[in-house]
Image (cartoon, rainbow, N blue to C red; front, side):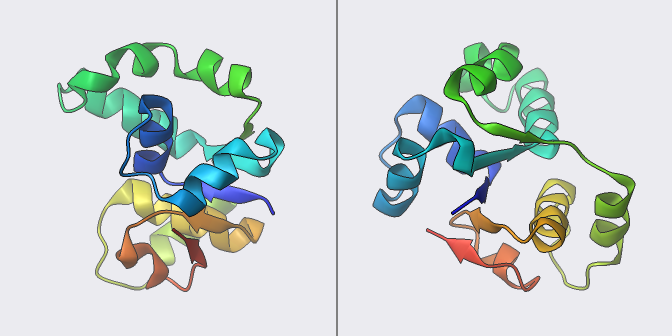
Length: 128
């Protein structure tokens, strides 16, 4: 099963953080080509690292493209259709990164690996 990974789950995977659920860890340890990482996550990680909000993730933030390729994860670009869908999503969740992930999941028929219950409110299948 191909899944789109929320940014926090991706960072927890790289950090070996115990907050990553057993289900999520099992997915990461499975077939790497089934793990899809959005350009939105790269954007979010770089932005937050630059702003000092991810001090523990600076190394991975600086080398994220290479790290994703080394892991064998699939990379998902942001398209005009994704942006259009994200902009029209109904709901109170205002985080632009999460809105983009939700739009991509809906358009690409992917479940999202996340513990963020707000993402499911967009009608997205989630796994945690």
